[in-house]
Image (cartoon, rainbow, N blue to C red; front, top):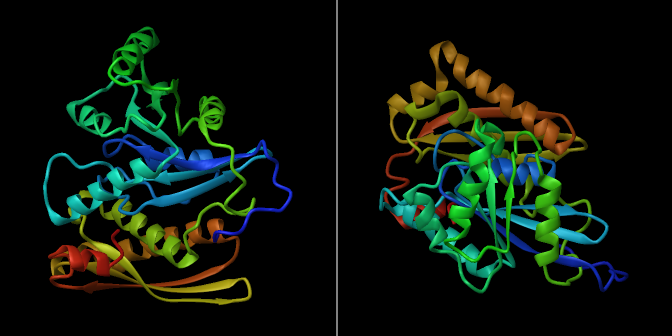
Length: 304
């Protein structure tokens, strides 16, 4: 899961580059990347601001290495320290990408989508991705909708997809591949991300917190891996869920610890699937007052 030098016999016809996946919150960016990579390397949730980091997912074929970068949803409503940090992550990724996937929901182009579209640099080829196209009841309006959105930017291609149904993902990758530069691979062919297992463990626990606690818990809650050990195939993970107040702590724990037990069980199962081995997981819930009061505090707890 770490960057490596390219194989000596890499073909000169080989293509490799960075593909930024951008869009407003909750259009399915993380689900799309997971589907393209074929593994769950970026967490998903109905809750906005679930993705807080640039998450890299890697897929390697015989002639192309796709290095996808899942970005936080661009925030347009609230101007706080966290949102400013997330938005800088998005804009920084756009300028460094070789190809951009601009993801919207099929049939829905909002002012927030337009704000993200206006950020797309003219010198980086962009593909308009109409996600959740399987939900469109009237397929006859999909083409006029796509044409209307595409008329507002010089897109290299327009591809309707469904990340959850694996619909037209091969066509999307074909379009991406032709736009990528001729480069040798940057990662080993078996790599699926450049993130450490420790980082992935923290993200998996955070996903389960949002999934089982939902809108009751503020988005500023996070997860800190206090210890990550490996003995043979067994991984021992000790995690702390950091919340702002005692009331939030009781939300996460639940009645007689039932909710925390469910979070732990589901997180452990996801880790075992991703890591390919048994996992021993212990989780505590801790109150950490003032940890997200400023941008320095955000960076100290893993925000980028």
